[in-house]
Image (cartoon, rainbow over all chains, first blue to last red; front, side, top):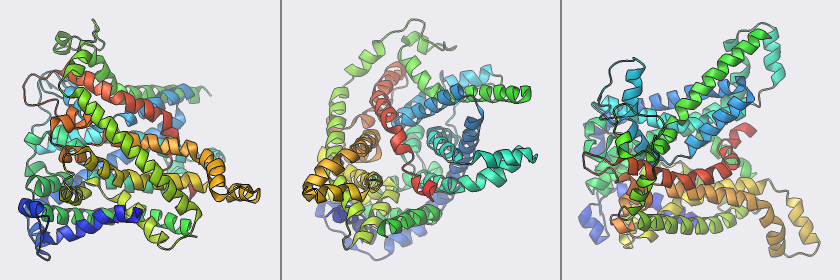
Length: 282
Length: 277
């Protein structure tokens, strides 16, 4: 029965993607089978390809920043005094706990062009004149602001997980390398990195999964009124094509294409989880 | 020694700056919530409210639909968590303890659903709910939340149950306890912490959920509190930032409290497969 609850939406998704299913069909509760027409129309849509390219770049930037900063902060946690570590970990957990919609509103407030504190702080730090600077002028800046929001929210999970993995690295190994006179970055690459590699891989895959399909943050931060094809991400493209234009068949086809891409991008995570499942089987 | 001490001091300084940067948005939200409007709109902001006021909190609470939507959120979240825990616990026990045909398929399904970006499920769920006239009802939202809360809960609970030695249960049964008795007296108390952690996590994810609630609930008196908050900015040029930040603070508080309670238990669940190799 549980399997039915879970499997039904997926079955429906596949079936919908092969139908013409608009508002009329929604009221009739019956779609018109059209074969692969939805897929053909999407793959022939230049907005789809542009959105896909934009989303891939966006995902690489977000995941890259999250993973690099997250690992660096985790390494920092190992080096600081205990009280600083506790303070920083506490702060990270607090950030982690912030609901995304709340975080978006705080970002809106901090970056509003009238009296946003970001404009004030950057101007005061003499990093340029940001007085009444509009942070949401171009698609690039809109997505860049979205990136800061997403990376900020994603860091705590990554830092805490990597730190947990780091604490499993045997002390003796690192000390032996230090005595041998190896520089810090060599110790990291040759001793630490191989041990925490599995965790880094899983975290990267999970981040790809999340960032590729992200919706709430860009949708609310850019604002529905400012959402245009030039700043679409895949999650928003799906929302606009499927829900706003009430073309559910087409939306379902986009979902399936997204799933295929995400699955390909996060093969590592999928394989690990399936192996875990196989172990559960044994 | 002094060199090491010196570099530690440097790292500490970096750590403190980092702490300040990460926590600043949360601090700024709370600080703004307590400032009178003229302090908020000042060009040169003060870091702390000079004349703290609770007025914005009153404004936020008095806004139309705040309490209705909080109530909606609570109904949706509590029903979702209750049903998800009951079903997920049984499924997790079945998965961890007993063999049955189709088990492999079940595990793959659980993992597969967890992988789907929620955006991918909006369309089929919307269509299915429309068929049964459950669009714009809380029941519809609860059903949708179950599809995401269930797989997660099954998977997490399974991890907690697998850790319990089978001998314990068998010993109880040898001592004349029935299977149900062993289940209630041995298994349930041991899994209780896991159940609490999982349900709190399900509570938080449902409370924070936005996209499904936004799409499924169109009436103001039926919306959940995240949707309410997302409409706060509206279209007016002069936004009431104080009330917005006060409302944000209020909505974040239950989540933060719950999150602090269970963070340690859940945090490593997601990557535990990797750590164990």
